[in-house]
Image 1: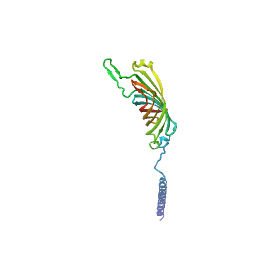
Image 2: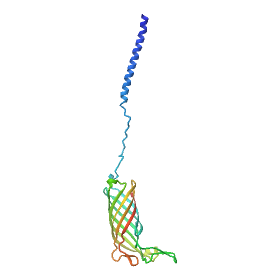
Image 3: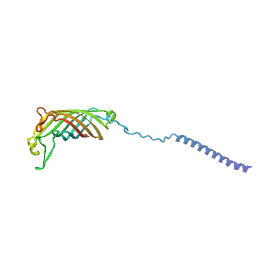
Image 4: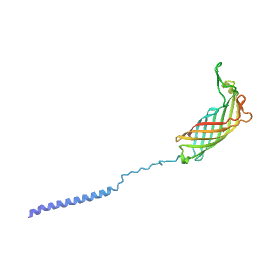
Length: 241
């Protein structure tokens, strides 16, 4: 009987230890499961800057300069401009063009005897340089942002006009130039389209009034020009400075 008791005692101890181990593992597993449920697998990143911005809310004191290619009833010309924004939709500007001036019916002919080109009845080569100062007002920027900026503008200023005698060779005729200064004004419209954050390309249209006064100034004999204004189309390239 004593030997049987010696066998059951170690067996009882083994069962007790096994029971404690299983109970402890179950408690630890339950605790781990409760703890692991507290983790969130979603990771949220916050942008250091707004994802969507309205460019028209940016600082308004911007400066641009640029150049123009101009087409009018006088032919082709080139120009330059400077623009300063003073309000969200309002800017001041200065611009200058240089182009020829002529009657609309001036047609060149070829002389087969001399090999020269000539315009019948032409007495003077005429050139003009309008210098304008004005302001421009943009529209619909709250709707369109700065991706497409339509505007209206108005300006005024002096126009330099000079003539050289047509009968003389071009460079020789410069020594016989005559200069005139007349006052002019214009109204215009256009649209600017950004190319980069600091540059744009635009299309403009202006109607100039530049009265010469008196009997006018002849380009073709007997057909004096009394108003050097007209309709000007411009292709504009602007760069922020």
